[in-house]
Image (tube, rainbow, N blue to C red; front, side):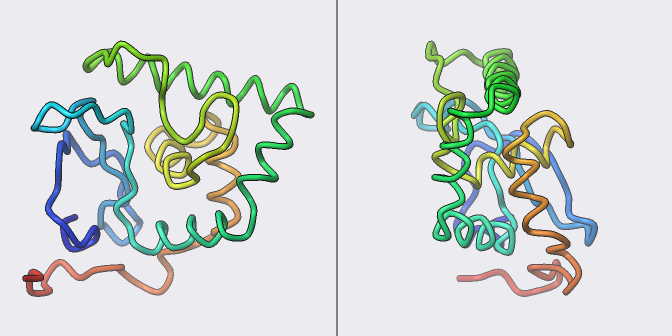
Length: 156
């Protein structure tokens, strides 16, 4: 995971999802980093391919389009609000940060597709509708093989 991220890990509790190649794609992080800093992002993408794909979607205006749809599609807005409530309850069960802020802009806007993708992968389809949608736009990211090799030498 450190090779995937290009930095040391912080606050990782567990691997929440693995790629079909076997590498981690999402980690569950502690609500507070080891130094005590609040970290409301419970699920964090580690796969560089998925991270790049999310960044591409963000640059292409997908977040703006999704946020606009939240204002015009009550069913989508309700599903997204439910995702927020589920995320918050799950994080608070580990440790409450005393805030209703989750991550990714939930429940009223889309601020970070990386978080929404991580949430969808960690919890499975049907929990976060916009994360599911972003994931569907990416397709089969694993087909070209692992993003990092387990037998590769660690980076300095």
